[in-house]
Length: 199
Image 1: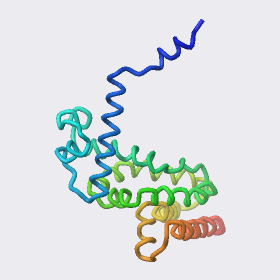
Image 2 (image 1 turned 90 degrees about the horizontal axis):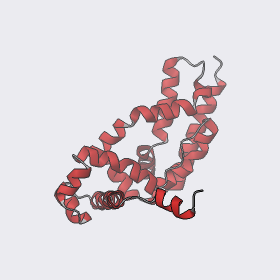
Image 3 (image 1 turned 120 degrees about the horizontal axis):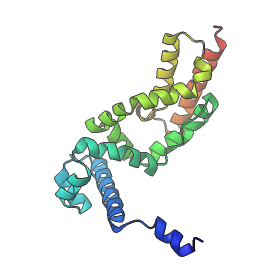
């Protein structure tokens, strides 16, 4: 018979695991602070900001690329990026939540859009991002010529992105919700047009 004490014992994390979690969180918070302030990102500055020795940081992150690769999922969770949409309707409905997530920490999202290592991390996830849109719009693109399907997916992905959100806010002086409304309108129009054209 398993007692409550046994269950507690089996799920209890080791001191090493708890220390790793604390170190990871402090490193991510420190990197976020540096990026928000527009500071250069070095392990020395990160060490000072996080209160973690440089050698310890290198134990968890072998280089800045590894640091930023860990930061990307941490940031998405922190700003509560919505779950992956499963179809065209969910994709359209998902845009306000996505733009709201970007608005939650605008300076940090903008920093990740423009920092060279932030760009590298986004490019490393480009294939997964393309697959996400391809899956959500599979019903729409089924039977479309490959070039047309690619054009639709590329346009929708551009609209449903931090870069699209930033462009609409900056170039059109839109608020986050207004930018989401514009992106929703455009994605809806693109999908409807793709469905309307006979194959």
